[in-house]
Length: 408
Image 1 (cartoon, rainbow, N blue to C red):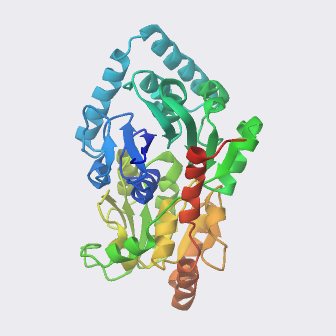
Image 2: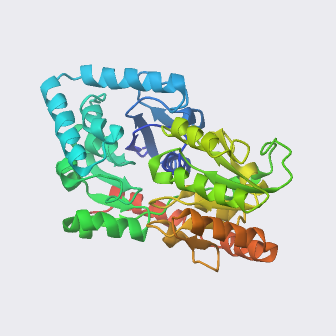
Image 3: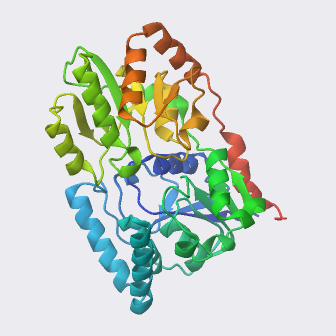
């Protein structure tokens, strides 16, 4: 008799081009379709990475937009998805009450974050499925976690935490006890676990580490494909990969580039990614006379030739979980400069496989100037970074344990 495959549902907020989504797709590729029926549900029903979804994974969304999440038309699709979520499943008073509560709390904290304002409503307005899964996985914080905790029928449930939970703006009041409904909570690094448990110390026994999976051989292969810089610039190239958001601190990077230019350093800084801060950053770049020096290239399908062709990779962020972009840069032997913040310091041993510096324009510019002037050190740091061990198959065993073993 043929063995019945177990059903695993993965839930993610969007499938836009970003680190967590890249790690999710790699995880889905690694799971054996002969053993498991794999399903994916995307809360917002959109994202340009849908074309990379493995063929053995069934997408449950009735409708899906493959437009880039942060493009003009993509934002229009997002607005439609928000409206549909409000109308679907009723409970209008509850949805409005949740938005109002979140807004009040955010205003008191001094920062209103639109995505977190709506996550609860999007969860309540998502599709429901008359299926009991063997395992349901909330692969991102926010709507995914709320949805799996409250609206999915599953024998086992687990949640993934990818960010510094404190710094990202989540609160216990916003979460409304959702993490008590998960059998396991996986964080992508030791430091992410530490910060999550500061918010939720009662879940220490059920919280484990699940490192991001990356395809290092695939990254190296794709780095050799056609693509990369096309501007024929002959100076030193700096590269950053990441969405244009407050977390990524591009405002500080622009100031650092201004210092480099004023000091006569022949370098150009490129950014791959898009986001809600693009217009603000473009204005600042123009105001400082850096239109040819700090270049926003947007999101690209294959970023790896850019890594391979860059002289330095810079990751100066306000906070992190565990950066896929840093792992990709290290895989391709890039010398990395990163801000000394939560997440980054776990990935870099300063002076051995990269440099950590303060998140200040002067500190970033000084670190860049040092490495640009020392080719031997750049090569040494890059080679050490490329030799770092990356956890792979043993991580999958943590999911299998949830499916196959009795929990304590």
